[in-house]
Length: 142
Image (cartoon, one colour):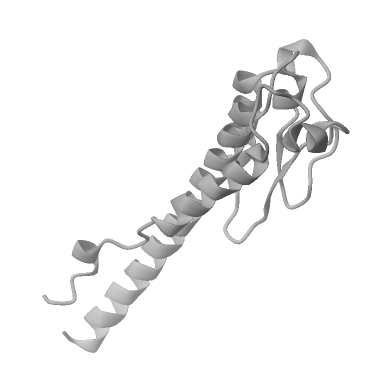
């Protein structure tokens, strides 16, 4: 392969790799978010709705009104927030309710102990299984 063609191929692969990494960050954030929200025990849905996604810094506040409670509103807000993700940025998943830690430690019999850790494990599994470049795309045998 000629050097100029090789350079163009490497540039294209780098752009593809970066785009795939960014997609993986967003998909992983949504996986962790949806897993932790669904794993959170429900009385009113406030704890589920208070899993907030923020970019660049931890989220402040909680879900304080019933239309923000539960999985649907929490997921919609997370997806909307993640549309603003920029390469290299930080994604924070926060729940500021004072009783979230006791819930994760088994205070409620509705959810297993460690639902937060289960969500992190789901995200870790997704990252470990990710393919950022397809071997067919690389195509250096041409």
